Length: 493
Ligand SMILES: [Zn+2]
Image (tube, rainbow, N blue to C red):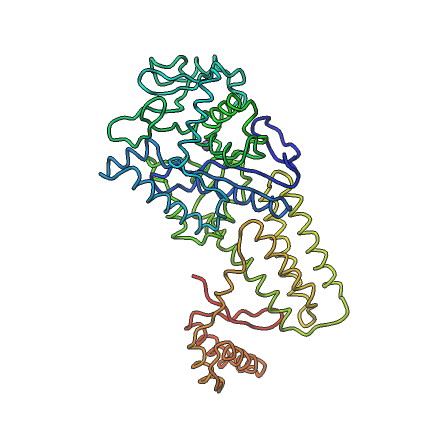
């Protein structure tokens, strides 16, 4: 399978360092607030990448950190009169909660910066010993970018051009303006740890690099993050690894594109800033997933609530199709002989599977994967319409199972929504009134009502048929007439 490597700007064959295994790391959030939907998109993209690698049979080890000590956390804590640890703890839990709501798989390893101080200090000491870092009188320790001949290789930047083109913070203690802090001397009131260079705390770039080395071993197969992290964060991560352990940090670097709102940059000042929580409060996770996966992970994603409404409809189309296939396989008479329609549905299942894999093998083209899935939805609906009365059970169930399986690889769970089918108890009363039903099961009451409605329609008694339908509607249900018969489902508003 082909994977695009941001470092070489080319798609390359994925060649695991250890056959059959993939070790991957994705930079996690700085926990000072709810994450925004752009971050949500990045984490979703790598969740799908991970799921697909697992589907392909790789044993994937996935690590993601929580940056729980940082200027932003300290500032937030000062604003709110709390400790940095309290703020970090609150937003670590909130982050994990939103990841669960978004059906993002937990990482195998979730290190926290504040618990990895020792590993970071060991790496910093090694860099100082090898002449790649230096401590200054104030107690900071800086990485010397000039000591790394390959500095700039990941982001394609040249230090001299950088110096001419970008404004950097003036700091007399640095030997080069692009030198970055590995260790920051403690300021009053800040969280700090003892170190050979005095009380202080680790720099952000140091954290990921030391954790990757400790938990996954370097180099790893895949390092990921948002495209905004390429420089300086990832450049600095890889520079440290190269100098400390004389090997690159990762074989393949993968970066997700930015998210825009109605084709504008998302920003608080434009008033179009959304947290993942706000969106998941309003829309089901599956619909947000479908919207995001319609765009390739490297391309800019255009997010809008109109598009989300469209994704909700797509999700309903998928669910209805799976339910109708299962319903038809269960309800319609079986026919031993394969008709042309049965054969062509079977071919559509195989084609959808092959197209899905071919798309995803091409640098995780989820838009192509979704197109394969919806192609099978179209073929299935056509089959259900045409094969009425002669449904072939095996091929019909295979179509339903394939839709569930392929959606599952994208993290779209079609099984959890079936709880939706629970029918309200009031159906029993309605069935007793309209169809003389005397039992207590809502499912049987539904059958009795549908049967009574079918009899009325057969007798062209439209008044009774419509009255039954309207009675059902008052319970929040709709009658769905499928080729294989009528069934009830909950109305979505
Ligand atoms: Zn990182």
